[in-house]
Image (cartoon, rainbow, N blue to C red):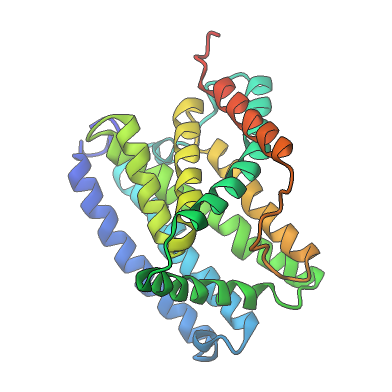
Length: 282
């Protein structure tokens, strides 16, 4: 196969190898994290230890397995992951990514409101709320009483590690393998669904799924994983910076009160996607 030039592995065989690496890596890194931090990190009583455990989990589950797989199946591991130069001209690339980064903030806000409006007042919704509350509790623990030092540490754990790890995992490996089994449209959507489910935030699934689709198409259009990594970094960094300015509290209500700004934001997003989707010769 084109992606695995050491032994001409099939996508199925590569996928099975990836699953094995993920299971081993996640077990080892989580075990090391618990061994170093102790049980206090598991119950959330020590924020520093919880942060360190989150870092170990992120590295073991998302970042380390794609790198191991790339070196295992390819003689060009960084190209396997998509870490090559973009096919678009730099000016066009930067303008497109900037517009998408700005517009995505407004789109996420609108989708979050739509997500809440679509959910009925039902027992299964309350069960989802309880699940998401657990995730938010962990986030609030990490964001509480932030100083410059903890802001930098959170930047590593909550911004840099997910931006690199999740993009290596989802767009670098999964989307590539899914593309070899079908169309790139189906691969992007399927990868985005996996991306949304792994976050374990069911009440925020719509905006997370949306961002997964955006990241997928941008990787496909630009020809490089660096583009979605940059957008992922900016998106998480903005959320962290907003929490820091808001005394460590996540913004759970709509931050946009103007329909005009919302429309302008969506137009910026649309323009950015159009710029990035144009063929190289245009």
